Length: 428
Figure (tube, rainbow, N blue to C red):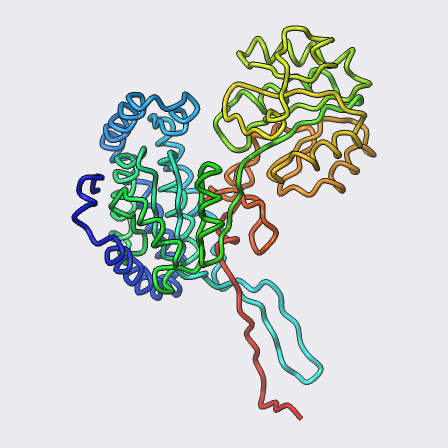
């Protein structure tokens, strides 16, 4: 992996064009690779991740030390850090992807026409995918494995803060490819930290890249959505809400809210705003806020919440549209499920929203009227995750409405074509 100093001596455009051309060549055999070949590569990758744990941890220590010297936030460092448990989870995620049904070649729908034509809609690989991500080195393994299972070549561009970790993980992926007899260029990692490499990817590398998937902060995703000349699967941020209805079970509400916010504060599925039914303020508000406070969460609230729970800090207008990715939550009282729906419509990023309620009418209204990618009932927002959906892993959560929405797993990394079989028919 080349440093910033090395970048000055490299023709970035030529480097990236070559990577794109090699990825396009690798995509052809991947598109027709058997399920057995792909699964053999994935399981070999998982073995290599476990065997290479010491090297990965050493590389990650270098990134963590540099991150601390750069005064990165605690939330950022949490996303960056790898531990033996996280590496084991990464390897298990790759094995889980291997265990998934192969989407390539599956028939989505089939029908016969009166003229005898038999028509099938069949899943096909997208081709070459560019993945641009920040801080989370585990995305290297998740993205590489998912793209492979879906028959795609991938060009990975990790953040400069996780450069050593991503390089160590990528070496394990290449090892798995080679052991299974698949092209090493099927999973490439951009070897430079220069941001010009991102610019070249967004141009499409001369037609080599079919889709871009950004995974990172608002600045990265906005740049990708503004500058990309190829389709993008993306979300700007995870501004997730949890609404506690008057009909909710109080103990359940406390547990779900605390888990939604505090299990891991730095992930996009962490709750950032708590909405409480005004009718339940007397019974629900204090127990929930006391539990959040005890867990170390800072609370910013509207005037009505502060009147009932004076320890809260005043919430500004910006708090309702801030993805904290930290142990901070904004809290407001609302007029029932209608008030919650109105608040979410004004402030949500359309990522994930949850309702805690026993009233079936309130639940159905919440589910039917909110247009976010993921909606949960009586469950933590932290379940907004491809692995928790049974997808093995995900590249990210897409909040758009075209092609992919919600967790982007193997099926979302395919397209389809129509296969029409006849017996000599001609059109009059």
